[in-house]
Length: 253
Image (tube, rainbow, N blue to C red; front, side, top):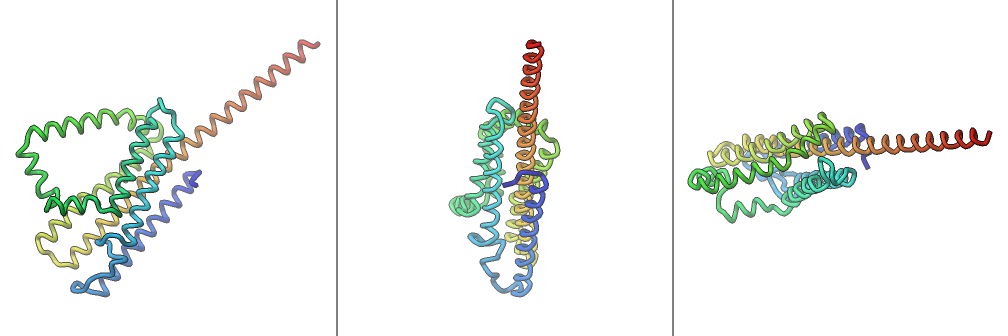
């Protein structure tokens, strides 16, 4: 159990070391086998159902659990609310499940092409659907803004850390993944593609670690405030009891 920011930092650094180790092993395996041989599926960053995939799924599950732990420590009527934090935890749980169940890969296979191929053309051809999607996105942002503002008030450092982690995760999971897909379509060398895969997967794992670190910082901060509040209440009770005893003693005289 993480109780202090120092423990959260140690966990974050440990996770980053594991990620670097996975990338180094992948790069070594690619160098040994060369561009014309198949890599070991157990450590292939571009494969599914192996050690890197399970590690990524484990990290995202930890983020979900941390959000739920944070939700249990805040007030229902406060900002961020328990419902918002539980929703965030559920979102990362879905990401964790997707890492092992490969939902988006199966959807891509069902559609026949990746979203980067058909989504821009679809939005261009269907203006009405684009407007509806934009309105839904705007409504979600407006609804989430008070909760993000509450996180900002609670800790600017942890909020900026979490936003940075989301940016890194999006860069690896969406931007670099799209670049890798375009590289395969363009017929680049397999060695260059494997370098891109290494950066893509490392950014994705690193982003998840940064988000986990930010949520743990929030958990430690809220727990520290609760301990301080309990100590303050205990001191007030002691002062009240002392004052009552003194008054009783004075009345006796």
